[in-house]
Picture 1 (cartoon, helix red, strand yellow):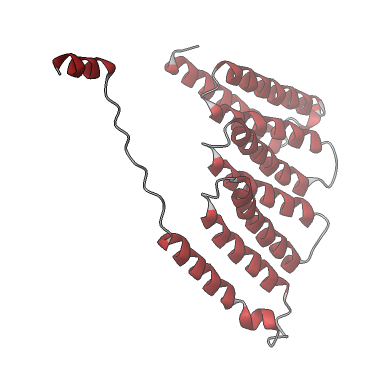
Picture 2: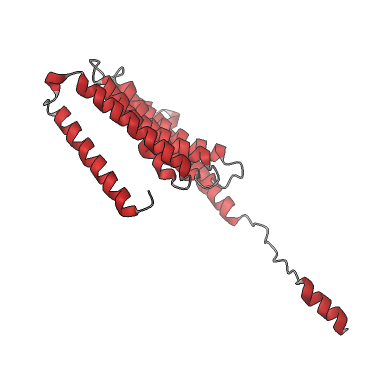
Length: 239
């Protein structure tokens, strides 16, 4: 379906119908008919995901289809979790997990051009993991530390996956986030701990690293001149 107006109308209709069904479900209008409304929503989400995956195989350049496809799979799982009690926080975590899978799928298809997908994908995975962990852990400081560590690990992963080491800058936010995660776990009463006193040294080292990398000279690429074969032949005859 190549007409963008037709595709836009179909997307609009699908979003409106999905919004109406979810709104009725949240308001409890469909509660007397349970579990059939949940089954219909699960099937609709799975069907939408299959359609997006199938159309992506025909239009590989439109990688954005992967994100709503994985999100629809996550929404189907969320509706399935509504049939189980006490899974509210797991539902929210599943949304972020679906988004993370979409960005990860996009990155794996083109690692050179879509390296940036690691950052939003890692952030979504970190948020989903913290939400899932909050269902079992009630300590706010521990959850905050896990979030900081996970976000920092995302930048370290970006640096590690880049074999050419062009994304060296990722070490800066990664280090800062890990430091803040360690500070969150440090008891506030023990103000004389070495970590609290000396952690700014890490910022100094990072600044020196940035200065070193910025002053490092790169080899200048020489522009090679190639003469056309016809021009060279004409010069020989002329000589």
